[in-house]
Length: 555
Image 1 (cartoon, helix red, strand yellow):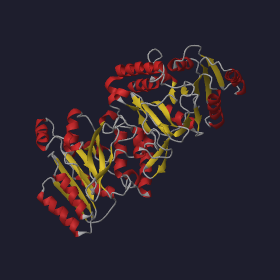
Image 2 (tube, one colour):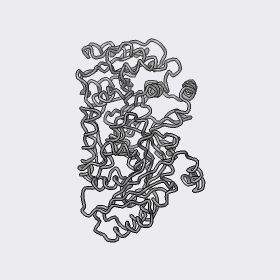
Image 3 (cartoon, one colour):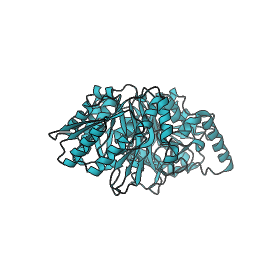
Image 4 (cartoon, rainbow, N blue to C red):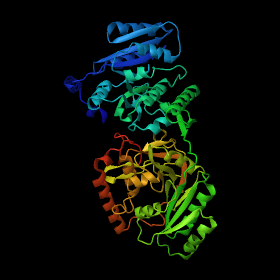
């Protein structure tokens, strides 16, 4: 209903192909080894059916015992001149068979095909059409789904555009993957010792060789179908222990080359965590906590930070915005004394302006890292500040956000998605704590366009370089999103981590946003964001255009 009507028909595809000035040869590389004949035939037929004709299929059969398989392969190679076949006499590691297939390739690009995979008829056409617009691309990848035994399609994985931290967390790129042949040859092709994760390892080594990550291009179309049983789980979670360990070692080697000092561990099969080192000496983090009355919330917030936080190098700046409650004022007066100087109380004696309050506190902050912290949050994970600081000090990272729960143990914040007319929204909102999320997004570190200012870390130098928060035009609602977008425009990546957890007793000190004057202010600030960021709000690179923007769910 959606995909097929959006595709050009075969005549239109042929017309477009003939109009291109560049027709790169694509070498499809695959290995076989006693593949079920029916699946192998379907795989080979999907290549023959490609609407883009400039391809070659390079197959290395790894000593299949089944004579049907060998006969089938030989028959296809005799009938189709674009099929190159190498029959290995002795079975070996899959990497060696893959390199044998790679040796047959003469194309400009290498496309990786599994023996039980199926290409969409328009797969190569779609990728090469994308190359016409971005001819300098070195690595291309598409979306994918699954085909059950009955031929029905399911489990569509609509991927984000290039996300380096998500790739470190799991191999979301997977299929269909196409790489420049000279890049593959430069890094030495496939390696022994990474069986089951040889494609992941190859991709990581190619990325380490690239200087410009803009050379990675995501094509948001389902071009690859996994041939898997309908009752199986998504591919990222089907890895065997050996494959998971192979991937972890590949990631560790990648980290050793690109980010020395990082330690890679396994979260679950196919999911990985990178622990980034804290510099020596550890940076001082200035935690900025705006407040107005609401003693019980502030008390819980400060106590949870002081009593549970294991990272030692921080100060807390409580910014009092015209508190009038006597008990609150008494508490604020005592805080610097009982905290032995760790907590300072600043006064902001003007009407509430969230952006201005944080800018004011920044001028008094002694730390090289700023932490924006709402007075209505409560620390859950003791190492939250270690985790967030370790990412914040990375030179390529801008704003870092945390995982926030409502008191009812459902998700309040797991990153922010840009939302066109609505400016921004919170995906996974109200999902149960402990849930995987869309393709494990709730379990892994990943890049996002923006994070909430309820708990946000950023280097002070970065905050000041982009002009801080816009206290003139964005007093409340979107000042955090605007900050994140300014940081992104400055060439840095924003990041969300599930390993820094809080409860968020949301916005209780400011009251409801349903009052007419607050609704009017919200509308004004939304218009500012639309004017300032325009079309950028309509296409979040970390949220697939194939997923609905007007729903919280990933549909």
